[in-house]
Every structure is written in structure tokens, then in C-alpha cells.
Image (cartoon, rainbow, N blue to C red; front, side):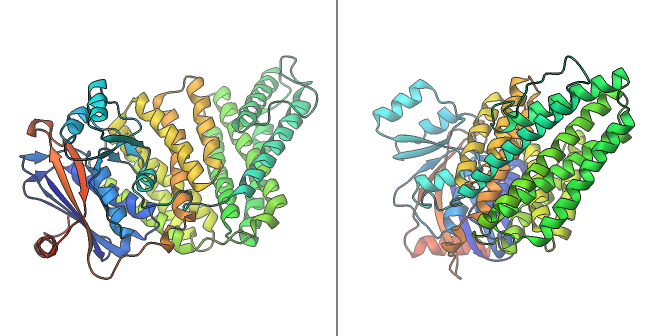
Length: 530
């Protein structure tokens, strides 16, 4: 089947048309692909209109499996790039820019072996030995890609290192943060060592190896154990614990307010402050749950300890930031226009999911993302760091809905997400997503459920994607001519029975007949789908 992807000056409409019929998954994921592609290359989605046209020789096109092709086509069109030879692409494009695996991959690749010299497949895609041998014998390359950025790098549309930049100061700051959290752990152990004999305690400040999330988990464990022991023995009152945590949260809020007002929106500063704000929001949520909804003392202490630990970690981050602020000031400030790109991405994605059939048990999660977006919009001008934190949180919740819809319980998808999170962390040169990967690893080792681990890895991956889009230099090279820009694609279907059994051949459109064909199509486009 033939697929045409076109980009022209407009206001963010995504128009789809097929000669026969497509289902809601094709339409929805085509929309997601366009959103993700525009955001990935740093373009304001609402500046252009996007046209997706299928001329399908089968009865129906069903499913999301063509979305990686659509997204890659949009990215190439926005970058005003064409390809010198056909390239096949299979995969689902997800909200963090990742390529997710598809079904019937062997059948799709077998249909392409005589038509292309290069095939891009997701890292998570399983292929049979027979398919791999056939491609090797025919000297056709199969290249695994984690995400849209890597696909663009492979195709020469994005130079390695052109996203993000040197964030060495952030890594230094993170090391200082770990040291400060470790000191906090030492103070906590010193404070409680005489309270309970069974409390794990070591003399000195080098209590645990100073690496990432380990110190946080140790601090949480010590605080929770000490408070539980103290309350059970009568040495502590639960009301005293509540007051202690409330005081920590008040101090954190005051410190954050002081710094958010006085510091410029430099790259590193914005990232750190946004993480502090995210920790504050989560800590307040846990605190409110502990004092308002916990049914037992054990539940209350567990949530209070988590709230306290988040506050201590955030205060340590602010203290580390104070010491590094002169270095961080050297980096350029982030334009508020870049923040608006993330806002539009999240809001359009929210609107898309809102109009689709979300399971009843997920409606509250969707509504929660909507509330975060509304709050973020109100904060974007006066508190960019808080707005960034809320955009990332809302994107993570929205992405989770789509991941669960496609890959519920899939360990293969989970492993691919983890790998992508680390890659995006390197791409954005922001070390913070690595902490979330470590936390996800810790959850997995403790036997947490699929959704809990997925959520943490998604937090890491979405942060990497958001930081890469926010701090990239791609918009300096993006150029969409005022006239219509397009790339021409040929898609092949294996069999009508396979539904959306699609693979993509990208070729440069040549000759006036191709241009006339596309313009004729654009003139006959239906009204945009809601």
C-alpha cells in the first residue's frame, strides 16, 4: 500500500485519509506519531498541518504498527530531508519517541527482502533465525533502533551529539547531592541509634557506597524502621512524626520559592529545580495521604517516611545547587517557547486520549494528567521549573496509558523501555533519568508489580525525551519551506488477514507527476477527524 506523509504551514491539524477503512488505533497512533516527531525535533506542533494518506489494497488497515513509519516521515519532512535509497521501517512510535515492537514482524520483513537494502527494527523486536539468515544471505542490513532520534542518526538526518550538549556540571552536582544525602543518612542514624537496638547503624559518614538511588533507599529504610520502633515502644508519638514531616515540607517549599524566584532559567538550574518541585509535589501527596487516608499506624508511618525522605533529598539537591550555581549560570537560558512545545505535546496527547475509549479504571489517571496540565499552564510564565516538572509528570501518566494498552505485562517491552531511558539520558546529557532507571531496577529486584516498574522506567524515559526536546539545538537546523514539503512512502501489506501488516519503503519523490498527485490529494482531503 502507498503511504504519503506531507507537512505544510498550518495550525496543528492531523488529517488522515484511506481509500478503504482504518480503525481507531491507526488514527490514534498516527496522531501520536506526528506529535512525538514534531516534539522530538523541537518544532512547535501547532505551526504546521500534517497529512497522512493510505492507498490500501486491502479491506481494512487496523492497528498501530505503521506509526513509526508515519513519525519518521514527519520528522524527515520537518527537517526537510530526503533519502537516497529505500529504507524499510517497522515499529510502533510511542509518546517518549521510542520504537515499540510489532506483531508478525517476520512476515513483514520477508515481504521486503527483495525491495530494500536497509531495515530499521525496534530493539525489542524478536526475529526468527530464518529471517535473519535470509537477510544476511541477500546482504540486506537489519539495524536495531531504540527511538526516533536513533533512527534519524542512522539515516543521516541527525548528527550524533547535536541533541543536548555538555552537562558536565549537572553530573558534578549529582555527585555532591549523593554526598549530602549520605550525610543526611548519617544524621538520621545518629539520631535514632539509641532508640532501637535492632536499627542498622555504622559509625562515620561513609555509610553506604555513594551511588545514586542507593542512599535514598537506605535513608527511607532507616527512617521507617526508627519511627516504627519509636512509636511501638512509646518513645515517639505519631503526632510528633507528623509535625516533623510537616516542618520539613514547609522548609522545602520556602527554599524552593526563594531559588525559583532568584535564579535564571539556565539549563542545569531548570532541571534541578524542576526535580525539586516534582519531589515536593509527591512528598505533599504522600503526607496528605498519611494524615488523611491511612487506616493503620503502619500505613501512616510508611507514607510519612517516604514523604520525609523525598523532602530530605530535595533539600540536599537545593544545597548542592547553591554550591554549583555560579557554574550553571554559564549555560544558556531556556526559552519559554521550548516549554510551550512540551505543553502542547502533553495537551494534544491528553485531548487525544480523552476522546478515545479509555478503560473505566484508567479515567482517574487521565483526569489527574489533565489537572497537572492546567496547573502547569498557569505556572509556565512565572515558574518555568514547576511547569516543566508538571509537564513531565503529565506526559508520564499519559504515556503509561498507551504502554499498558499495547504491552500490558510484557517484560520484553519493559527491558526495551529501560534501555531507551538510558539512551535518552545520554542523548539529553542529563544524568537525572539514570536515577530513575536505578530506582526501577530496585523496584524490579524487590519484586514490584509490572505497572510499578513500568511507571518508574517511563519517568526516566519521558525525562530523557523531554530534556532532549527542551535543550536540543535541532530547531536551529529545522527548515520547512513556506510551500508544501513532503516525503513519498510505499508500504507493503503481507496479507489482508494480518490486518496492519505493514513495512515501509522510503523513497524520494521525483517528477512533477508525483507533486501533482499529492496536491490533488490535498485538495480533496476531508474535514479533519476529531
